[in-house]
Length: 527
Image 1: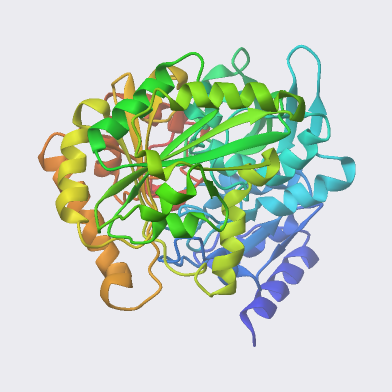
Image 2: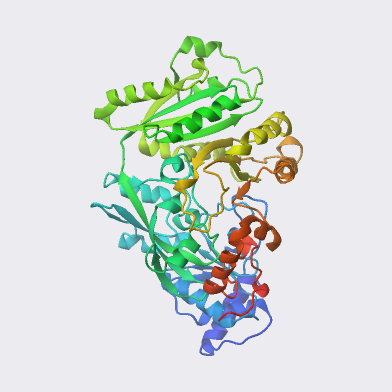
Protein backbone atom coordinates (compact mmCIF):
# COMPACT_ATOMS: atom_id res chain seq x y z
CA UNK A 1 0.00 0.00 0.00
CA UNK A 2 1.33 3.45 -0.90
CA UNK A 3 2.51 5.61 2.04
CA UNK A 4 0.09 8.38 1.08
CA UNK A 5 -2.87 5.95 1.27
CA UNK A 6 -1.74 4.76 4.70
CA UNK A 7 -1.64 8.34 5.92
CA UNK A 8 -5.07 9.10 4.50
CA UNK A 9 -6.59 6.02 6.15
CA UNK A 10 -5.12 7.11 9.47
CA UNK A 11 -6.69 10.52 9.06
CA UNK A 12 -10.09 9.00 8.22
CA UNK A 13 -9.93 6.68 11.24
CA UNK A 14 -9.07 9.60 13.48
CA UNK A 15 -11.95 11.69 12.17
CA UNK A 16 -14.34 8.80 12.66
CA UNK A 17 -13.29 8.66 16.30
CA UNK A 18 -14.21 12.29 16.78
CA UNK A 19 -10.72 13.68 16.45
CA UNK A 20 -9.36 12.14 19.63
CA UNK A 21 -5.59 12.63 19.75
CA UNK A 22 -3.60 9.65 20.99
CA UNK A 23 -0.01 10.26 22.06
CA UNK A 24 1.92 7.40 20.57
CA UNK A 25 5.61 7.20 19.75
CA UNK A 26 5.06 6.43 16.06
CA UNK A 27 5.66 9.60 14.08
CA UNK A 28 3.05 8.80 11.43
CA UNK A 29 0.37 8.46 14.09
CA UNK A 30 1.35 11.81 15.56
CA UNK A 31 0.94 13.40 12.15
CA UNK A 32 -2.42 11.69 11.79
CA UNK A 33 -3.62 13.51 14.90
CA UNK A 34 -3.56 16.69 12.86
CA UNK A 35 -6.51 15.32 10.87
CA UNK A 36 -8.86 16.61 13.57
CA UNK A 37 -8.08 20.18 12.57
CA UNK A 38 -10.69 22.06 10.58
CA UNK A 39 -8.77 23.73 7.79
CA UNK A 40 -9.51 25.98 4.85
CA UNK A 41 -6.63 24.23 3.08
CA UNK A 42 -5.34 20.69 3.46
CA UNK A 43 -2.47 18.39 4.35
CA UNK A 44 -0.84 16.33 1.64
CA UNK A 45 1.67 13.52 1.56
CA UNK A 46 2.29 12.90 -2.14
CA UNK A 47 4.49 16.00 -2.48
CA UNK A 48 6.69 15.31 0.53
CA UNK A 49 9.68 14.61 -1.73
CA UNK A 50 9.29 17.98 -3.46
CA UNK A 51 9.27 19.68 -0.04
CA UNK A 52 12.51 17.88 0.79
CA UNK A 53 14.41 19.69 -2.00
CA UNK A 54 15.73 23.21 -2.21
CA UNK A 55 17.87 25.41 -4.44
CA UNK A 56 21.08 24.22 -2.79
CA UNK A 57 20.24 20.68 -3.97
CA UNK A 58 22.66 19.19 -1.46
CA UNK A 59 20.35 18.15 1.34
CA UNK A 60 17.05 16.24 1.36
CA UNK A 61 15.08 15.91 4.61
CA UNK A 62 11.75 14.16 4.06
CA UNK A 63 8.82 15.67 5.99
CA UNK A 64 5.90 13.64 7.29
CA UNK A 65 3.36 16.00 5.72
CA UNK A 66 2.98 19.21 3.76
CA UNK A 67 0.43 21.82 4.76
CA UNK A 68 -1.21 23.74 1.94
CA UNK A 69 -2.79 26.52 4.01
CA UNK A 70 -5.93 28.21 2.79
CA UNK A 71 -5.68 30.90 5.45
CA UNK A 72 -3.45 32.24 8.20
CA UNK A 73 -5.73 30.40 10.61
CA UNK A 74 -4.58 27.12 9.07
CA UNK A 75 -0.96 27.95 9.83
CA UNK A 76 -1.80 29.02 13.38
CA UNK A 77 -3.96 25.97 14.07
CA UNK A 78 -1.27 23.60 12.84
CA UNK A 79 1.52 25.17 14.88
CA UNK A 80 -0.76 25.38 17.92
CA UNK A 81 -1.62 21.69 17.66
CA UNK A 82 2.07 20.73 17.43
CA UNK A 83 2.71 22.95 20.45
CA UNK A 84 -0.10 21.22 22.36
CA UNK A 85 1.37 17.80 21.56
CA UNK A 86 4.29 18.87 23.74
CA UNK A 87 7.91 17.87 24.01
CA UNK A 88 7.24 14.17 23.53
CA UNK A 89 6.08 14.76 19.97
CA UNK A 90 8.77 14.58 17.29
CA UNK A 91 6.96 17.09 15.08
CA UNK A 92 8.51 20.36 13.97
CA UNK A 93 7.28 22.95 11.46
CA UNK A 94 9.16 24.66 8.65
CA UNK A 95 7.81 27.45 6.47
CA UNK A 96 8.80 26.94 2.85
CA UNK A 97 8.59 29.86 0.46
CA UNK A 98 10.11 29.34 -2.99
CA UNK A 99 12.57 26.77 -1.61
CA UNK A 100 15.64 28.90 -2.27
CA UNK A 101 17.48 27.78 0.86
CA UNK A 102 20.95 26.31 0.40
CA UNK A 103 21.26 23.47 2.91
CA UNK A 104 17.81 22.32 4.02
CA UNK A 105 16.92 25.44 6.04
CA UNK A 106 13.32 25.29 4.74
CA UNK A 107 12.97 21.56 5.35
CA UNK A 108 11.67 19.60 8.35
CA UNK A 109 12.83 15.99 8.78
CA UNK A 110 9.78 13.98 9.87
CA UNK A 111 7.89 17.21 10.50
CA UNK A 112 5.47 19.50 8.68
CA UNK A 113 6.43 21.82 5.84
CA UNK A 114 4.09 24.77 5.34
CA UNK A 115 3.87 25.64 1.66
CA UNK A 116 3.65 29.42 1.96
CA UNK A 117 2.97 30.00 -1.72
CA UNK A 118 -0.33 28.13 -1.24
CA UNK A 119 -1.27 30.73 1.36
CA UNK A 120 -0.54 33.53 -1.10
CA UNK A 121 -2.52 31.78 -3.85
CA UNK A 122 -5.50 31.27 -1.54
CA UNK A 123 -5.58 34.98 -0.78
CA UNK A 124 -5.16 36.08 -4.40
CA UNK A 125 -8.89 36.28 -5.08
CA UNK A 126 -9.19 38.85 -2.30
CA UNK A 127 -6.39 40.97 -3.85
CA UNK A 128 -3.95 39.92 -1.18
CA UNK A 129 -1.30 42.44 -2.25
CA UNK A 130 -2.72 45.82 -1.26
CA UNK A 131 -1.00 49.07 -2.18
CA UNK A 132 -1.51 52.28 -0.18
CA UNK A 133 -0.40 55.68 -1.44
CA UNK A 134 -0.31 58.96 0.43
CA UNK A 135 2.47 60.59 2.41
CA UNK A 136 3.88 57.24 3.58
CA UNK A 137 3.19 54.80 0.76
CA UNK A 138 3.38 51.11 1.57
CA UNK A 139 2.22 47.70 0.42
CA UNK A 140 0.67 44.91 2.48
CA UNK A 141 1.69 41.52 1.10
CA UNK A 142 1.30 37.88 2.22
CA UNK A 143 4.47 36.25 3.50
CA UNK A 144 4.20 33.62 0.78
CA UNK A 145 3.94 36.12 -2.07
CA UNK A 146 6.82 36.38 -4.53
CA UNK A 147 8.58 39.75 -4.70
CA UNK A 148 8.11 39.82 -8.47
CA UNK A 149 4.33 39.75 -7.93
CA UNK A 150 4.58 42.49 -5.33
CA UNK A 151 6.52 44.59 -7.82
CA UNK A 152 3.97 44.05 -10.59
CA UNK A 153 1.18 45.22 -8.29
CA UNK A 154 2.99 48.28 -6.91
CA UNK A 155 4.05 49.41 -10.40
CA UNK A 156 0.36 49.76 -11.30
CA UNK A 157 0.38 52.62 -8.79
CA UNK A 158 3.69 54.08 -9.91
CA UNK A 159 5.38 52.80 -6.73
CA UNK A 160 7.95 50.17 -5.76
CA UNK A 161 9.77 48.87 -2.66
CA UNK A 162 13.03 50.68 -1.98
CA UNK A 163 15.29 47.70 -1.32
CA UNK A 164 15.57 44.44 -3.22
CA UNK A 165 17.34 41.14 -3.56
CA UNK A 166 19.06 40.38 -6.87
CA UNK A 167 16.53 37.60 -7.53
CA UNK A 168 12.83 38.50 -7.23
CA UNK A 169 11.32 35.03 -7.48
CA UNK A 170 11.60 34.60 -3.72
CA UNK A 171 8.90 35.04 -1.10
CA UNK A 172 8.45 38.08 1.09
CA UNK A 173 8.65 36.07 4.31
CA UNK A 174 11.70 34.16 3.11
CA UNK A 175 13.94 37.15 2.43
CA UNK A 176 12.71 39.05 5.50
CA UNK A 177 13.69 36.06 7.64
CA UNK A 178 17.28 36.52 6.43
CA UNK A 179 17.96 40.15 5.44
CA UNK A 180 17.40 40.71 1.71
CA UNK A 181 20.44 42.41 0.19
CA UNK A 182 21.18 43.91 -3.21
CA UNK A 183 22.84 46.91 -4.81
CA UNK A 184 20.40 49.38 -3.20
CA UNK A 185 21.42 48.38 0.35
CA UNK A 186 24.14 51.06 0.59
CA UNK A 187 21.39 53.69 0.45
CA UNK A 188 18.25 52.10 1.88
CA UNK A 189 19.70 49.24 3.90
CA UNK A 190 18.57 45.61 3.43
CA UNK A 191 14.92 44.69 3.02
CA UNK A 192 14.55 44.12 6.77
CA UNK A 193 15.28 47.84 7.30
CA UNK A 194 12.28 48.79 5.15
CA UNK A 195 9.44 46.99 6.92
CA UNK A 196 6.74 48.83 8.86
CA UNK A 197 4.69 45.94 10.25
CA UNK A 198 4.52 42.15 10.37
CA UNK A 199 1.86 39.54 11.05
CA UNK A 200 3.48 36.48 12.62
CA UNK A 201 2.39 33.04 13.78
CA UNK A 202 4.59 32.29 16.79
CA UNK A 203 5.80 28.89 17.95
CA UNK A 204 2.81 28.78 20.32
CA UNK A 205 0.40 29.11 17.41
CA UNK A 206 -0.57 32.68 18.25
CA UNK A 207 -1.20 35.22 15.49
CA UNK A 208 0.53 38.46 16.48
CA UNK A 209 0.69 41.81 14.69
CA UNK A 210 3.89 43.65 15.49
CA UNK A 211 5.75 46.79 14.45
CA UNK A 212 8.35 49.28 15.65
CA UNK A 213 5.88 50.41 18.34
CA UNK A 214 3.66 47.37 19.03
CA UNK A 215 5.12 44.03 20.14
CA UNK A 216 8.44 45.44 19.01
CA UNK A 217 10.58 42.70 20.55
CA UNK A 218 8.95 40.08 18.31
CA UNK A 219 9.09 42.45 15.32
CA UNK A 220 12.86 42.89 15.55
CA UNK A 221 13.39 39.24 16.46
CA UNK A 222 11.61 37.98 13.35
CA UNK A 223 13.42 40.32 10.94
CA UNK A 224 16.52 38.37 10.00
CA UNK A 225 15.52 35.80 12.63
CA UNK A 226 15.97 32.75 10.37
CA UNK A 227 12.39 31.66 11.07
CA UNK A 228 13.18 30.91 14.71
CA UNK A 229 10.50 33.05 16.36
CA UNK A 230 7.52 32.83 14.06
CA UNK A 231 6.24 32.36 10.54
CA UNK A 232 5.81 35.67 8.72
CA UNK A 233 2.33 35.54 7.18
CA UNK A 234 2.02 39.21 6.16
CA UNK A 235 4.34 42.20 5.88
CA UNK A 236 3.85 45.94 5.39
CA UNK A 237 6.70 47.27 3.26
CA UNK A 238 7.70 50.88 2.59
CA UNK A 239 7.40 52.15 -1.00
CA UNK A 240 8.80 55.00 -3.07
CA UNK A 241 7.96 56.43 -6.52
CA UNK A 242 9.09 53.98 -9.20
CA UNK A 243 11.10 55.19 -12.20
CA UNK A 244 10.24 54.09 -15.72
CA UNK A 245 13.77 53.50 -16.98
CA UNK A 246 17.27 52.53 -15.86
CA UNK A 247 20.66 53.38 -17.35
CA UNK A 248 22.61 50.17 -16.70
CA UNK A 249 26.41 50.51 -16.75
CA UNK A 250 29.36 48.15 -16.48
CA UNK A 251 33.06 49.04 -16.27
CA UNK A 252 36.20 47.04 -15.45
CA UNK A 253 39.15 47.53 -13.11
CA UNK A 254 42.43 45.64 -12.96
CA UNK A 255 43.49 46.95 -9.53
CA UNK A 256 41.59 45.85 -6.42
CA UNK A 257 42.50 48.89 -4.33
CA UNK A 258 41.27 51.31 -6.98
CA UNK A 259 38.11 49.24 -7.43
CA UNK A 260 37.21 49.31 -3.74
CA UNK A 261 38.15 52.96 -3.27
CA UNK A 262 35.83 53.97 -6.11
CA UNK A 263 33.00 51.85 -4.68
CA UNK A 264 33.43 53.40 -1.25
CA UNK A 265 33.55 56.88 -2.77
CA UNK A 266 30.25 56.24 -4.52
CA UNK A 267 28.37 54.86 -1.52
CA UNK A 268 29.58 57.79 0.63
CA UNK A 269 28.33 60.45 -1.81
CA UNK A 270 24.97 62.08 -1.40
CA UNK A 271 24.60 62.41 -5.17
CA UNK A 272 25.39 58.99 -6.59
CA UNK A 273 24.05 56.03 -8.54
CA UNK A 274 20.89 54.19 -7.48
CA UNK A 275 22.43 50.72 -7.51
CA UNK A 276 26.06 49.78 -6.90
CA UNK A 277 27.42 46.24 -7.04
CA UNK A 278 30.82 44.74 -7.81
CA UNK A 279 31.92 41.44 -9.33
CA UNK A 280 35.20 39.57 -9.38
CA UNK A 281 36.13 37.95 -12.71
CA UNK A 282 38.78 35.22 -12.56
CA UNK A 283 40.50 33.58 -15.50
CA UNK A 284 37.92 34.51 -18.13
CA UNK A 285 38.61 35.66 -21.66
CA UNK A 286 36.34 37.55 -24.05
CA UNK A 287 34.32 39.09 -21.24
CA UNK A 288 33.55 42.24 -23.24
CA UNK A 289 32.33 40.15 -26.17
CA UNK A 290 29.84 38.51 -23.83
CA UNK A 291 28.57 41.92 -22.74
CA UNK A 292 27.88 42.97 -26.33
CA UNK A 293 24.76 40.79 -26.48
CA UNK A 294 23.01 43.14 -24.05
CA UNK A 295 25.24 46.22 -23.72
CA UNK A 296 26.89 48.61 -26.14
CA UNK A 297 30.40 50.03 -25.65
CA UNK A 298 31.00 53.73 -25.17
CA UNK A 299 33.95 53.41 -27.58
CA UNK A 300 33.62 50.34 -29.86
CA UNK A 301 37.15 50.65 -31.26
CA UNK A 302 38.85 50.78 -27.85
CA UNK A 303 36.62 48.01 -26.53
CA UNK A 304 37.60 45.72 -29.39
CA UNK A 305 41.27 46.16 -28.50
CA UNK A 306 40.90 45.26 -24.82
CA UNK A 307 42.59 42.02 -23.74
CA UNK A 308 41.93 40.41 -20.38
CA UNK A 309 45.10 38.25 -20.60
CA UNK A 310 43.80 35.89 -17.93
CA UNK A 311 44.05 38.60 -15.27
CA UNK A 312 41.80 38.91 -12.24
CA UNK A 313 39.44 41.74 -13.16
CA UNK A 314 36.85 43.62 -11.14
CA UNK A 315 33.55 44.72 -12.63
CA UNK A 316 31.63 47.68 -11.25
CA UNK A 317 27.94 47.54 -12.10
CA UNK A 318 25.92 50.74 -11.70
CA UNK A 319 22.47 52.09 -12.50
CA UNK A 320 20.82 55.48 -12.67
CA UNK A 321 17.02 55.58 -12.56
CA UNK A 322 15.16 58.06 -14.77
CA UNK A 323 11.91 58.86 -16.53
CA UNK A 324 11.68 59.55 -20.25
CA UNK A 325 11.50 63.34 -19.82
CA UNK A 326 14.62 63.28 -17.62
CA UNK A 327 16.94 61.55 -20.11
CA UNK A 328 19.11 64.62 -20.76
CA UNK A 329 19.57 65.31 -17.04
CA UNK A 330 20.37 61.65 -16.44
CA UNK A 331 23.08 61.75 -19.13
CA UNK A 332 24.72 64.73 -17.45
CA UNK A 333 24.59 63.19 -13.98
CA UNK A 334 25.98 59.86 -15.18
CA UNK A 335 28.79 61.60 -17.03
CA UNK A 336 29.73 63.66 -13.97
CA UNK A 337 29.80 60.59 -11.71
CA UNK A 338 31.77 58.45 -14.15
CA UNK A 339 34.36 61.22 -14.58
CA UNK A 340 35.32 60.74 -10.92
CA UNK A 341 36.04 57.03 -11.35
CA UNK A 342 39.29 55.34 -12.41
CA UNK A 343 38.08 52.35 -14.39
CA UNK A 344 39.73 51.07 -17.59
CA UNK A 345 38.35 53.58 -20.10
CA UNK A 346 37.92 51.10 -22.94
CA UNK A 347 35.59 48.93 -20.86
CA UNK A 348 32.64 51.32 -20.41
CA UNK A 349 29.47 49.54 -21.56
CA UNK A 350 25.86 50.60 -21.01
CA UNK A 351 22.25 49.98 -21.97
CA UNK A 352 18.85 51.46 -21.17
CA UNK A 353 16.14 49.09 -19.94
CA UNK A 354 12.84 49.42 -18.09
CA UNK A 355 12.92 49.39 -14.31
CA UNK A 356 11.12 46.04 -14.32
CA UNK A 357 13.58 44.51 -16.78
CA UNK A 358 16.53 45.51 -14.63
CA UNK A 359 15.09 44.29 -11.35
CA UNK A 360 14.06 40.96 -12.90
CA UNK A 361 17.38 40.46 -14.73
CA UNK A 362 18.40 37.30 -12.87
CA UNK A 363 15.19 35.54 -13.89
CA UNK A 364 16.19 36.06 -17.52
CA UNK A 365 19.44 34.22 -16.80
CA UNK A 366 17.51 31.54 -14.91
CA UNK A 367 15.39 30.74 -17.96
CA UNK A 368 18.53 30.29 -20.08
CA UNK A 369 20.11 28.00 -17.48
CA UNK A 370 16.93 25.95 -17.14
CA UNK A 371 16.88 25.45 -20.90
CA UNK A 372 20.41 24.04 -20.64
CA UNK A 373 19.62 21.85 -17.64
CA UNK A 374 21.99 23.90 -15.47
CA UNK A 375 19.57 25.40 -12.94
CA UNK A 376 18.53 22.43 -10.81
CA UNK A 377 22.07 21.43 -9.91
CA UNK A 378 23.84 21.67 -6.54
CA UNK A 379 24.66 25.23 -5.47
CA UNK A 380 27.37 25.20 -2.78
CA UNK A 381 27.20 28.96 -2.23
CA UNK A 382 29.28 30.83 0.31
CA UNK A 383 28.17 34.32 1.40
CA UNK A 384 30.42 36.38 3.66
CA UNK A 385 30.33 39.83 5.23
CA UNK A 386 33.90 41.16 5.38
CA UNK A 387 34.95 44.26 7.36
CA UNK A 388 36.52 47.04 5.30
CA UNK A 389 39.71 46.89 7.40
CA UNK A 390 40.48 43.31 6.29
CA UNK A 391 38.94 43.12 2.81
CA UNK A 392 42.32 43.75 1.09
CA UNK A 393 44.03 40.96 3.04
CA UNK A 394 41.07 38.74 2.23
CA UNK A 395 41.21 39.56 -1.51
CA UNK A 396 44.96 38.99 -1.77
CA UNK A 397 44.68 35.48 -0.38
CA UNK A 398 41.37 34.42 -1.92
CA UNK A 399 41.56 35.91 -5.41
CA UNK A 400 45.33 35.74 -5.67
CA UNK A 401 45.84 32.21 -4.36
CA UNK A 402 42.84 30.08 -3.37
CA UNK A 403 40.75 30.89 -6.47
CA UNK A 404 43.56 31.89 -8.78
CA UNK A 405 42.83 29.23 -11.36
CA UNK A 406 39.36 28.03 -10.49
CA UNK A 407 35.85 29.24 -9.85
CA UNK A 408 32.50 28.09 -11.20
CA UNK A 409 30.02 30.91 -10.81
CA UNK A 410 29.67 34.65 -10.22
CA UNK A 411 31.56 36.29 -7.37
CA UNK A 412 29.90 39.37 -5.87
CA UNK A 413 31.87 41.97 -3.93
CA UNK A 414 30.46 45.35 -2.92
CA UNK A 415 30.36 47.60 0.16
CA UNK A 416 27.41 48.68 2.30
CA UNK A 417 26.99 51.14 5.16
CA UNK A 418 26.37 49.71 8.63
CA UNK A 419 24.25 52.74 9.61
CA UNK A 420 21.60 51.58 7.14
CA UNK A 421 21.16 48.28 9.00
CA UNK A 422 18.90 48.34 12.06
CA UNK A 423 20.92 46.68 14.83
CA UNK A 424 17.75 45.78 16.73
CA UNK A 425 16.96 43.02 14.23
CA UNK A 426 18.41 39.52 14.49
CA UNK A 427 20.80 40.01 11.56
CA UNK A 428 24.47 39.69 12.53
CA UNK A 429 26.95 41.93 10.69
CA UNK A 430 30.59 43.00 11.20
CA UNK A 431 31.22 45.79 13.69
CA UNK A 432 32.58 48.36 11.23
CA UNK A 433 30.88 51.27 9.49
CA UNK A 434 31.68 49.87 6.03
CA UNK A 435 31.71 46.16 5.29
CA UNK A 436 31.63 44.14 2.09
CA UNK A 437 29.19 41.52 0.95
CA UNK A 438 31.20 38.79 -0.82
CA UNK A 439 29.18 36.05 -2.48
CA UNK A 440 30.70 32.97 -4.11
CA UNK A 441 27.72 31.76 -6.14
CA UNK A 442 29.03 28.43 -7.37
CA UNK A 443 27.18 25.80 -9.35
CA UNK A 444 28.22 22.16 -9.41
CA UNK A 445 26.87 20.57 -12.60
CA UNK A 446 29.33 17.65 -12.69
CA UNK A 447 29.96 14.75 -10.32
CA UNK A 448 33.73 15.13 -10.31
CA UNK A 449 36.51 17.56 -11.13
CA UNK A 450 36.35 21.35 -11.03
CA UNK A 451 32.59 21.37 -11.53
CA UNK A 452 31.78 19.13 -8.57
CA UNK A 453 30.32 19.87 -5.16
CA UNK A 454 33.39 18.37 -3.53
CA UNK A 455 35.69 20.77 -5.37
CA UNK A 456 33.51 23.81 -4.61
CA UNK A 457 33.20 22.88 -0.94
CA UNK A 458 36.95 22.39 -0.70
CA UNK A 459 37.47 25.94 -1.95
CA UNK A 460 34.78 27.27 0.41
CA UNK A 461 36.42 25.55 3.36
CA UNK A 462 39.80 27.01 2.45
CA UNK A 463 38.29 30.51 2.34
CA UNK A 464 36.52 30.14 5.69
CA UNK A 465 39.59 28.55 7.26
CA UNK A 466 41.75 31.47 6.11
CA UNK A 467 39.28 33.96 7.59
CA UNK A 468 39.10 32.19 10.93
CA UNK A 469 42.88 31.74 11.30
CA UNK A 470 43.84 35.24 10.18
CA UNK A 471 41.47 37.47 12.12
CA UNK A 472 39.45 38.64 9.13
CA UNK A 473 36.41 39.21 11.35
CA UNK A 474 33.94 37.90 8.79
CA UNK A 475 30.34 36.93 9.44
CA UNK A 476 28.52 34.43 7.26
CA UNK A 477 25.23 35.39 5.60
CA UNK A 478 22.82 32.50 4.96
CA UNK A 479 25.15 30.59 7.26
CA UNK A 480 25.25 26.78 6.84
CA UNK A 481 26.17 26.02 10.45
CA UNK A 482 25.14 22.64 11.83
CA UNK A 483 25.89 22.93 15.56
CA UNK A 484 24.73 25.26 18.30
CA UNK A 485 28.35 25.90 19.20
CA UNK A 486 28.91 27.38 15.75
CA UNK A 487 25.78 29.49 16.04
CA UNK A 488 26.84 30.82 19.44
CA UNK A 489 30.13 31.92 17.93
CA UNK A 490 28.26 33.51 15.03
CA UNK A 491 26.00 35.58 17.30
CA UNK A 492 28.69 36.35 19.85
CA UNK A 493 27.44 38.83 22.45
CA UNK A 494 24.00 38.79 20.80
CA UNK A 495 23.45 35.09 21.50
CA UNK A 496 21.85 35.73 24.88
CA UNK A 497 19.19 37.96 23.31
CA UNK A 498 18.60 35.49 20.48
CA UNK A 499 18.18 32.60 22.93
CA UNK A 500 15.87 34.62 25.20
CA UNK A 501 13.65 35.47 22.27
CA UNK A 502 13.55 31.80 21.26
CA UNK A 503 12.38 30.80 24.74
CA UNK A 504 9.73 33.51 24.60
CA UNK A 505 8.22 32.95 21.15
CA UNK A 506 9.01 29.30 20.36
CA UNK A 507 9.69 27.63 23.71
CA UNK A 508 9.47 24.07 22.33
CA UNK A 509 11.79 24.79 19.39
CA UNK A 510 9.10 23.79 16.90
CA UNK A 511 9.96 26.24 14.14
CA UNK A 512 12.58 26.18 11.37
CA UNK A 513 14.45 23.04 12.48
CA UNK A 514 16.47 23.07 9.25
CA UNK A 515 18.52 25.99 10.55
CA UNK A 516 19.98 23.54 13.12
CA UNK A 517 20.16 26.18 15.86
CA UNK A 518 17.84 24.79 18.56
CA UNK A 519 17.19 21.03 18.48
CA UNK A 520 13.70 20.46 19.81
CA UNK A 521 14.77 18.42 22.85
CA UNK A 522 17.47 20.89 23.91
CA UNK A 523 15.32 23.73 25.22
CA UNK A 524 14.03 23.76 28.78
CA UNK A 525 10.30 24.25 29.30
CA UNK A 526 9.41 27.97 29.50
CA UNK A 527 5.63 28.04 29.32
